[in-house]
Image (cartoon, rainbow, N blue to C red; front, side, top):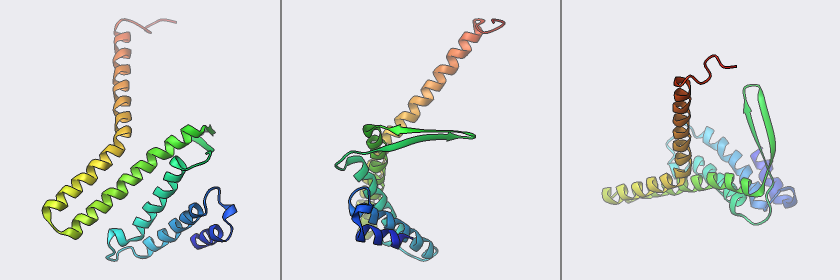
Length: 176
């Protein structure tokens, strides 16, 4: 499947809704996933493993969608139990959503690279510094999501307290 996608992207670039390497990257993800399953249980290093290739290809695709030239058209949707809905998303909404994911993937790649370099160097001082740097970069990339989670938690607490006070004052009790 993956090799077919790569072949299609290389032989007919017009079949890809973007540059040819975008389609090839999507195909390489499938190939690398198959290799990851095949090498499972073997002693393959993180940066020589197919998983690193998968991360790299996903990051390349996400970065192109978020920051590449040209217009973007995305659809957004939500599903919960028996309810689902979808709608067209604007270009900025599309780019922002993929941008957050791309930055997180970029940070994970840099973190993995720095950790791998630290292990290659073997020096404990540099190893610890590089790992801390990678963790810091990942923390910065995840900070918008962490901030959103904190804000949602605070909002939920404020809402619960407001409902408690409203009920304590007799609001909603016996009113029609």
